[in-house]
Length: 360
Image 1 (cartoon, rainbow, N blue to C red):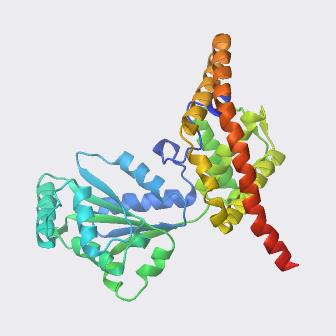
Image 2: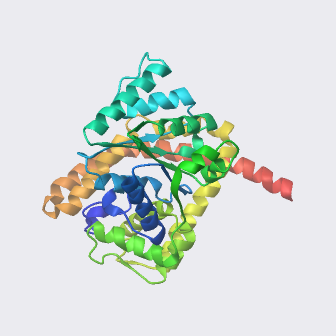
Image 3: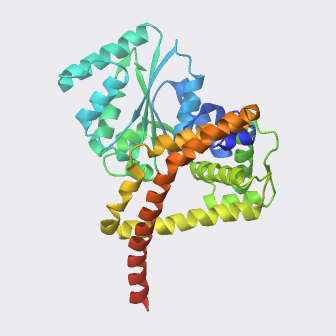
């Protein structure tokens, strides 16, 4: 809704990784350089680790944008806790090879033939494994064994392993020595510094067509950094809410007070979320509120009407009439929401009151 209001061409803080928004902080630039180095070496493993939301997937998306599909065949595998045989099937499937009703020997033979055929055509094969911290030791060993395929002493498969910080500890565990010896470079992504947070926000705004509206006060950036701890995904979520708040309040300036207001809303939501989890038995029936038939579509229709009204003011009379009709449609729904929210508040208040009584 705020996109048209502030003149953006796209949402600047969307969660979906888009290479157009890649921001080369010192850590992310170093990690991308390691990935490029790994491609140039055509062998071994590159390991990139980082906490949730630090931008590992964005790195991969940015790297894939650079690849020449005539020379490199790349596939990305987002893992769960896959055992070795299942991992092999997932790898084979990621390169669009048949995998159903095949035993392990057949899968290995098929994959080796694919690697050798690709090498004869002058193409290199790259496998990117995301969420590698979920893989058990046997599955990591399976990946290492796949790296043994060679032709004329040249490796046929190169792998990049991306995982959360716990993956670093996994690599240092017993039985991982052979895999560690294949790692030619590794890098850990840290949260953004205060200055990088400001640069990151302004970079994404500029990519989205920002012309200075809204203006961010200098004091707003330290407050945003404090509320998000410099984690890119948290920054995206926070700034998306911040711009929505600015739109609703018709703000042209984002000040420190505005940031703290939104930050307090997030804090309250966390408290309520924790209380709701505590009150889950009482809350179970009430949560059907969010799955009422047609709720999302009705709200989407209303948002479309508002967007059209902002974009085409000459249609004001027609659009206002449509909006009035849709508001009438929502009136009954809102009453139902109010009743259910009252029940929710009571369900949340009961465990909070119980905790207060216990502490007193």
